Image 1 (cartoon, rainbow, N blue to C red):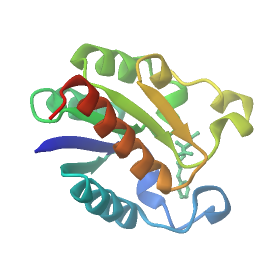
Image 2 (cartoon, rainbow, N blue to C red):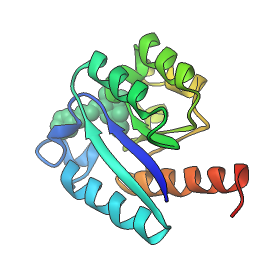
Image 3 (spheres, protein in one colour):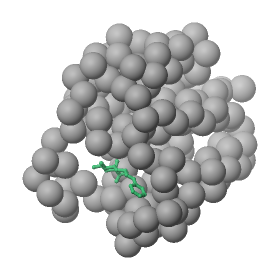
Amino acid sequence: MRSILVLNGPNLNLLGTRQPEVYGRETLDMINNDCVQYAGSQGAQVICQQSNHEGALIDAIHAAKGTHQGIVLNAGAYTHTSIALMDALASVELPCVEVHLSNIHAREEFRHVSYISRVALGQICGFGSRGYQMAIGALIAHLDELDPK
Ligand code: CA2
């Protein structure tokens, strides 16, 4: 069975508590449960992790190699700053779909830049929590293309 890492970065553990007009009302636990359900319906499993620490996110990406076949990543604000996360993703050579709850291109200019996009298959943003399921679907379709059943 295919296994996908759903990795969330800084402050996303606070979802559902503040700024619902930007990030929605769902908690990260609710989003993670939806990811597990959706992946299961597609014959895949997901493992969900979150950290507020850049190094821990890098460790999780390194550990994904050999364990998971792809990564769904919302790197939070590290998206716009972290060359180290970009390098980690490039080094493991796993397909990655970047997700953002909000439409980062319609927000402040500093959010328009994503280092993750340079090494991701693609980016899904602006669809709220549904974006995670869209990303899982896109990743599974990509893996199916690489290795048809
Ligand atoms: O839209 C997204 O998913 C973001 O990755 C969220 C990040 C932001 O820095 C990115 O530009 C876009 C911020 C996550 C903060 O989440 C909070 C949730 C509840 C309360 C406060 C912050």
